[in-house]
Length: 229
Ligand code: G3P
Image 1 (cartoon, rainbow, N blue to C red):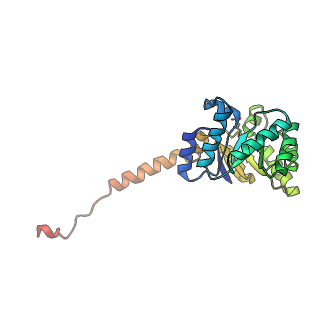
Image 2: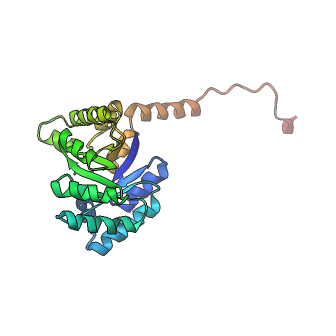
Image 3: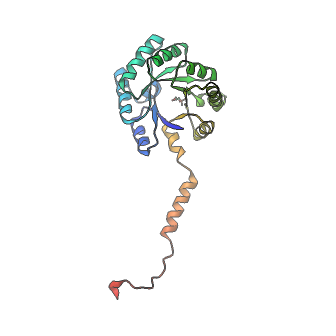
């Protein structure tokens, strides 16, 4: 299962990169706004910077509404860098744009997916990635991971190539379940990435190993050092 980072923050991307575990990045307009990105020019500059650092797919989301606008914006975004994957919402116009961009050889991530039938439509429209939002489903009392199971079954039944990119991940259990189900990608907020590596028993065990080594009983040496003979 590939690990993407769900952020537009360069420091977080750099740190995740240094672990050697990063396969890609996803951004969205909210994450861009959080970084104080002011206009279209800065938006594109940030996407370019991320693409230059990350050797993998970098999702850049359209901020337009009609299918024509999304196609035009998608083309422009895709010209920023070969790593760019254009992100469109799972609405009628987004699916039309997805199909058109796909026909032009532009990779598309269809986002804001909340049902398996939406995911099926996106696959038929040629999406490279489908982004089901598991955390937001949990927030409204549904089990987000059930959606991943259903999509996995449907895509398997009909041999769709669209990759399941588990999004809106809130905690390590989402990641564990995604791996059990066989999702293709998880996109993680930075804090969840850090949590994946941590366990209190690991820290306690490591501290004890180092302490025991420091306090090991040293044998009295039978031979005296040569210098003192
Ligand atoms: O990748 C989509 C993700 O950023 C949405 O996450 O936590 O805003 O539901 P969240």
